[in-house]
Length: 268
Image (cartoon, rainbow, N blue to C red; front, side):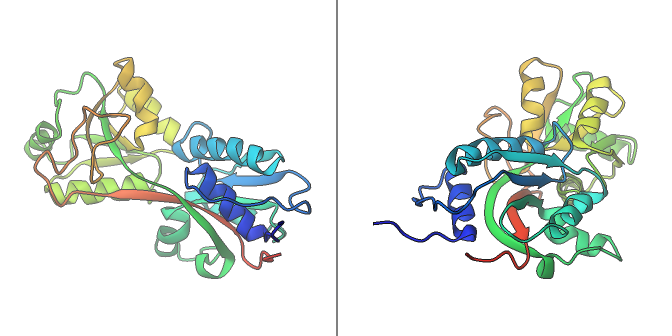
């Protein structure tokens, strides 16, 4: 027996399948019949970009159509959201939305050119994860506790790179540092790869971003990770303790990424 599958339902099903959720769907012959665009506000090589490409690969198999990744970095992901909400709401354009695009931007920008509640149609949550606090190998602190002690001894002297002002890594880092009672100097970059390059070169001592950004560099010992900010240790960094394990139980923070479509995308 063949069931009718809506565009929104089909996207939801395939996104959840891509995320490892066991949801069975029958693909309708009428959709999709051409490539689907997937916008992301992350620069090439950033954590959102890596997730978008993994999702695109799996969606293309499930939907039997190419998924075209379009990076629109900058302005807290506003450019990506503008491209999304300016597209036809026909199921052929979707986007990754981080906490910045879905929540934070409404408070950070006085004239946001889109309304997350009015202009975005939620499709599915995708991933939730912690941030990692990484440092250049020459940085004297090897643990989060030692980092806190250093920062308390020299307030504002430690430079911490973040992908952008108001990004999830920036705000979670602010929460962690405030809870730990320390003052650092945040250095925002245009993109996550720029922040990563800066800490690898030693331009900043510390960088905060998703663990995916740092794992290869931990393996080749060009970076060290002091702690992760989630409720549990990261599978990719099993030897790295959480900030709670380091004695700072209130300094916990995780970010999420979901999939959205333009508002008024038809259900059929």
